[in-house]
Amino acid sequence: MISTKYGKVVKGLGGLYETRVATDIGVERLECRAKGILKRDDEKVLVGDNVIITLDDSTPDGIVISEIEPRKSELIRPPLANLDYLFIVFAAVKPSPVIETVDKLISIAEHNSITPVIVITKSDLAIDASEEYAQIYRLVGLPTFITSSEAGDGLTELSTYIKNEVKNGKTAAFAGASGVGKSTLMNALFPHLALATAEISRKIERGRHTTRHVEIFDIEDTKNTGFLADTPGFSLIDFARFDFFSLDELLPTFRDFYPYLGKCRYADCAHFGEGEDECAVAKAVSEGKIAKSRLESYRSIYRVLKDKKGYDK
Ligand SMILES: Nc1nc2c(ncn2[C@@H]2O[C@H](COP(=O)(O)OP(=O)(O)OP(=O)(O)O)[C@@H](O)[C@H]2O)c(=O)[nH]1
Ligand SMILES: [Mg+2]
Ligand SMILES: [Zn+2]
Image 1: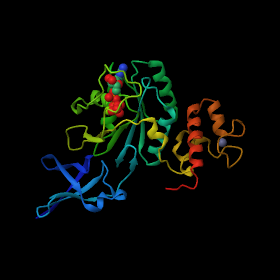
Image 2: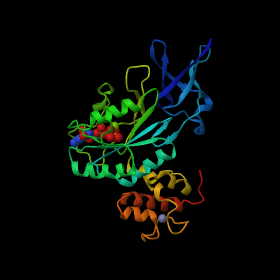
Image 3: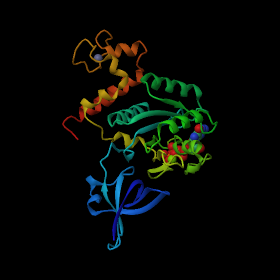
Image 4: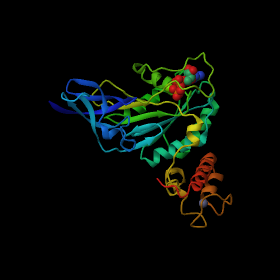
């Protein structure tokens, strides 16, 4: 006998997927493999995929993912489909953030129509630095939270935001460098998750990877719950090799630049000149309307993309 079910892929390890199937009486979890064609690199199942699962008594596998529903979005790093929100997590210190990486993640989210949210952790270790970083992203116009899982600061604000925004099947992921405290924060916000975290005693600056695979969890035990993904931390090397998008697509991902575009002296201004009367973006920086680090990140990413000219996705 053959039957089908709709499910969501919440975990994938070594070709074995865990799917979440909502039924009339609750939630059921099915372990399955993917149908042959969905094992090809260009058709691979991603965590976050909404899929059709086929149950067939007459085949050896019995239960397989037979179809992937069209994706709203698809990220390479973290490897996740159908995200609505990307919580970009970095620590005020230990490890200190690489702001360009934060800005890259924002651009990737914006480019994929995913809402970026900034989450600063470990404010108990450096409250002034936390405020300074937060100021950069408030200026961009992004939701920005300062938190300390250790001291319990900012947790109510963040969990309220998540419960209000990430519901009715929407999905958010926590992403950022290894050791910034993503899993610790998710546990502090939603204790039922009980995720593994690095022990406090170990002094990590760069961090060894504690979370090793992407996994999606239910936020609340209700029918209209949203989903939250924990992801393995990035290393800086991951980001050096990051496959980005094309040069033309970069500027639209810097929403804080929008009010000044088209106002530079030359129509083809690439916003590299320091001359404030020539470049409206540089002028906005000098007036404190755009954070300096944002223009630096923009220029740095621009250079990388320019060198990659000729390469098109
Ligand atoms: N002081 C302080 N330490 C924290 C805080 N949050 C997390 N930590 C510590 O930071 C370390 C890393 O925490 P994790 O939650 O494992 O970090 P992660 O981002 O999930 O790391 P990966 O899974 O490797 O990506 C642990 O030793 C935590 O105890 C905080 O708010 N304050
Ligand atoms: Mg973790
Ligand atoms: Zn300009």
